[in-house]
Image 1: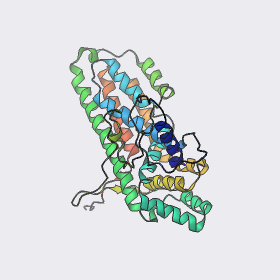
Image 2 (image 1 turned 180 degrees about the vertical axis):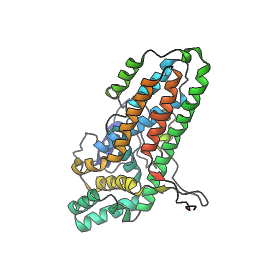
Image 3 (image 1 turned 60 degrees about the vertical axis):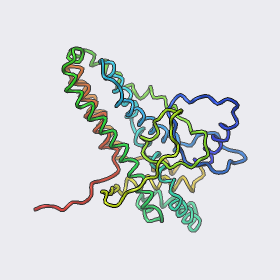
Length: 332
């Protein structure tokens, strides 16, 4: 399971005489449990997918900070984001990350294990896989679900904010001579987008600490190693704030993956089913298609900024959201 594999990784890190500085951001992971005598050194698939999501969110942050001084800067943003939009890569990654967030709720995980002890692991696992809503009735599921919804909402909010910046840039750049140049690289640009997924190289690692740090929005993970704060704030909703209403089936799928990982011994046979979310995967397919069509139809480089905002960011945020607006009264 994730926790056992992570324990081994952290133990090995403390035995290195001169640890090297990591080359990328640090992903805050669940607290390790006691190391096994014969640990499995292969990183679990759920963890690998979660790292991909954290890497994606890091690239969104970098896109928001990038100075747009040439067409190459727009190309860099478009290519960096498009690396994640192939097939089910980003969908699986988000579900896996959300499962790690849910797994930080001890009441929820204890309830999952109690059910598995009573009915048997095989029966509990089958129920979790068959119906994503089943897990929402467990003790602690409401809190875990809200944690997940808030974490994803924080990430989606920043994606939209970066999208707003690129949308505004599409107007501002019309005053720049380089952005007014007719774009003659459309075939090359489309080819680069098509092959972007082949150039993804995720380089994250677990922090060298045994502290149990809360996990929230992946936005909190992107400080460089020398400044990263592992003591992330607890997620909470204050009285008077508008509370999020999670999309029950999407969040239920994420909670089910966390629950299944807590009772399964690294067997991905059932977990793979929970990583799949056909509706969101179809949404991401439309993102790729709309982005390509937008780029193909563009005549000037500043139009690429609009394509990034509208499709590579805002449409993706729509696909990845896991909450819905509070119910409002219907006016006649």
